[in-house]
Image (cartoon, rainbow, N blue to C red; front, side, top):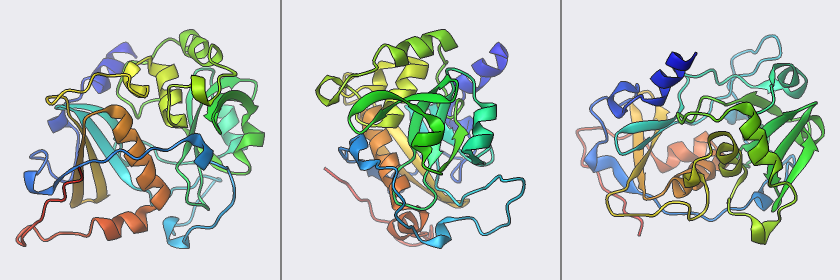
Amino acid sequence: MGNQLDRITHLNYSELPTGDPAGIEKDELRVGVAYFFSDEEEDLDDRSQPENYKDQSPSKDGHIVLNEIEYSAFCCQECIFSKLRENEDLTIYSIKTLLTMCKPGDLVELVYVANDQPPHWAIYEGGGHIIHLYKGEIRKDSLYEISNGQLGRIVNNWYRYRPLPADLVMQNACGHLGLRTDEICWTNSESFAAWCRFGKREFKAGGEIQTAEQRYFLKIHVSENNVHSLMFHSLEDLIREKRKMDASGKLRVIKEFPIVNVREEKHNTVIP
């Protein structure tokens, strides 16, 4: 198991399958802008989203596959995140099924199929409970109750960092219970839950020193041959932009990043 973890932790940029195997295309590179989000946007409500967001192929055994945006992310040339269907199982499950799969310390993602919110991330504590950043507070809740009928999955392997032992993951999560907005140094549920599991200060707001040389790249896999790259100077900014696109839905992202004929002139979009 250790060897397998080492293998995925040290994937480099060229080893991860993408639509542009030669690397990041200069003429499609965009400089990312930081969007400030808080978990107050995640109201776990039931606003509707276009039906086209769902994969129209029939589901079986209660498992559902969504037509989601796929991503890969890199720090310099090293892969640090992969949400690609060819590498990961993107199936989502009912909460009842998910509870049979979870172990303490697991990283859980709740997916809002029927609204325009980003996924909600949490650490599974055990006994059907999660610890998460929700509405400006780090709290413990019943996974079944907080999900409000939504679907979920375990996402332990999406980030390529080496995970902490389960007891330390739980120590990180439980040690911050009760903190509220002014005391919290994470800007969204994903950053908090990922920090608990991996212990990397890069997930905290202002947790890393930004330099001109330090670059993160988010590759947006709109389709097999349509991959766009955004550049950031911090992991925190990259995560916020990724969540913004998840909340927008794939159809809106396709409109923002239309398929470009490689023979046509391409224009850079630089966001200050």
